[in-house]
Image (cartoon, rainbow, N blue to C red; front, side, top):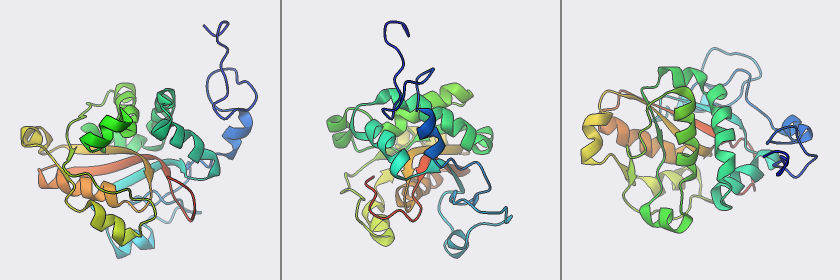
Length: 234
């Protein structure tokens, strides 16, 4: 197949030896391989052995978070292509990134669940990008996959352009665990999957719903985390 359809660089750069980014693009992606805040995944220059000031001042509803990379001009393009341009071929690559970045959380997880879309948005978009990442991640790591652990019971306006408090108000009470899934969720350590972590408002609303249904612990793994990057479209 490679002879008939040679691999192309996802970033439009020189042809790689296998499907993926060109070498130049790989060097520009800011992977979070060093010490990070256990609570939100913010990178530390040194291992401080503690959570960041923000997590200490306002503990989050999810227990821990990891991100594969920072959300910037380089990582934004493939993430948006998956989210809005039907590039489902990118999802397995992001799953591999998360299998490394969130390795500790995956090892402790009883199940992996995607942050859901409202059914009307799912109908218009045709797929949930978080589910497209979560499914191959579950298969790759051998972790049970719970695609229907959560539902989005009301359609909320976009989070883009809202402040942190505005985002929290926007998604307050928007998620729930269906009655038919409560017994399945109770007592589990669940790893939530999403594409981008901005303020964490959506993930926190999901974590609250899961814990209200009896989940023992809820962690979060995302492809990219926004950090001091105003103006970037998500």
